[in-house]
Length: 480
Image (cartoon, rainbow, N blue to C red; front, side, top):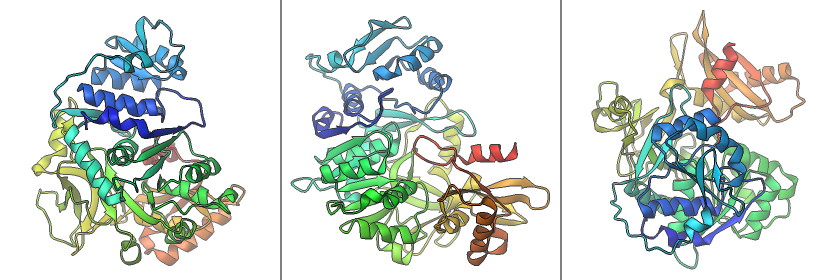
């Protein structure tokens, strides 16, 4: 990939609907990524939702010497640069780059990219391609080191799984997820470019504008969060659209009710609907639900990809047989090389020779993975273990809410009280009446100990840049 990267990015199209800052979704982001790969440099995509202090910590911890950014990020850089003395060079896209910034020399991106000097760098397959920091919701973020081989094999695996043929029928992907996240970059964009397809990049998500791009570019592949699909289906602008080009609708991060999957199948008549799962430490996707499983094993994650070995391990390090619950562990070329400068975390992550995911689940007789919950999100209430995901799946099946999260809060009687936080579909709904209806809905579909003790109705959830609800923040907010 390093040798061919700069030949691949020419088929990236751009669709910008908001101001650029710090290399948001753009063709220059993709070209910079492949340029780093070819030059044997380690790319460090930065989460744009972080504060200047958090960005400075990442750059200092990683030993970053050069930053590539958009002109709109000048104020952010001015706040960050004094905090990172080792950072010496700034590269800015656009035509109006200043000569220097906070005492650092500034180069124009176009000048760097147009340098005709032949680049001859030997890049080994196990060399680090990029470092991506985890969200760090409970501790300092950890830098995940991923090799060229891991990204390349994952790209081939994803191309097979998602149906990206090379040739006249190559894929057209419309990507709205942030490229600084491993899902958008490695799981979505790289496989399409590797097989000669086209990527349309959009900044921000707005249903009608998104649908315009689907029609204009005859998009074949969509990847959205469940709440985004809900917004699409609820948009009046979806009526009368020609969406027959779409072959695959992928979702992740949260459950998608069967009713909504059926709506998607009707709206996109030629598309399959696919659930994908994975994590930064094992380049996603690691597990894909086959479309046929939506009828037979709808609550499952599906089987692991052909290039990932997924097993279940008990606390002693023993691999357990199908049907037994334990921690999901992985092996294979997708797995990270390790955490940057964190031997203690590496010892825990690779204990007993497998990558520990932090997810609890089991395999069935056919090797299909059934996810129970994150280890840290299992709720222990009244002597019983409750899967927050199972409760969330029941809540989100109600058409009255668009999003939900379930957490455990300290409780003198129960140890932990099952607590739900929901965002209503109708902002003007009476919260108390909605709560009573949702509790009744839960009592119909859950055991008594699984039914939430409390339901909080809110207008917005705390989220990461990729749309994942931050349960740690919810717990903190609810306890204050």
